[in-house]
Picture 1: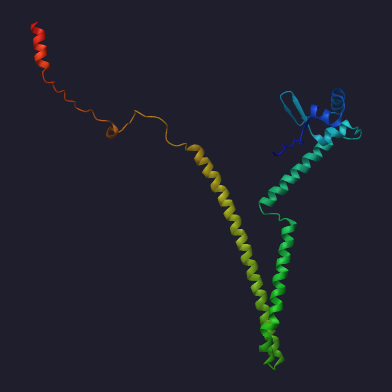
Picture 2 (picture 1 turned 90 degrees about the horizontal axis):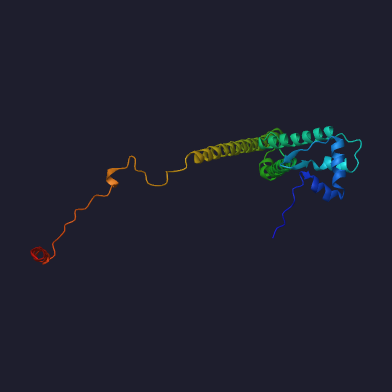
Amino acid sequence: MPVQKADLSRLSITQLVELTRKDNRTITKRLRESGLKPIAQDGKTIWYAPELALAVIFGGASLDPAKELAKLNAAKREMLELQLSEKRHDLVPAVDVDHGYIALATSVSALMLSLPSALALELASEPNPAKCQEILEKAVHGALTDLANAGARAVARVAAEQKADEERSRNGSLGNEAAAEDDGPPVGRGTKGRSSRNKPRARKVEVKAVPGSSSRRDRSRRR
């Protein structure tokens, strides 16, 4: 059975007592004297930022809680901005950039190394040096053009994938809104506006007389 990890992104007075092994009144006094403000409050439970509260408890005399909290908030904001830029594809992870450069260098190397074997026969049968130079330049320019076209296709493919992801995300959000608005037909029977075709028709029932029943009634009346 997996063990559930405790949430240490915020700490209460009770948790600070357990972690620091200090008296409850000592911790409360140091936090109050330092002017450290809690980051949240849930009913009677007050929550503090762990890194700031522990620094105050263990004697951070020169620590300014307000400045430290401002630094923490600035770091969190910068992290969120970086994550948002990465989702927008404004930033690319350094590892992906390295892989891209390696793939590009590999493609260039393979293409250049293929030129000698491709041009060997043609150059061997050509005695004119100027013509040999022309053949080589044409082959190099053709190889570079192929690389440029491959790069353009890769950029277009990435742009198309990004656009498709945005459309899927947009359609998914619209689908969720439509599903929330349309909960389906009402449950139960509705009498208002009910079609007459669905209404059951009354049956005509014939009552047949039982043989001998009329004579018995006549005899009882005579009596």
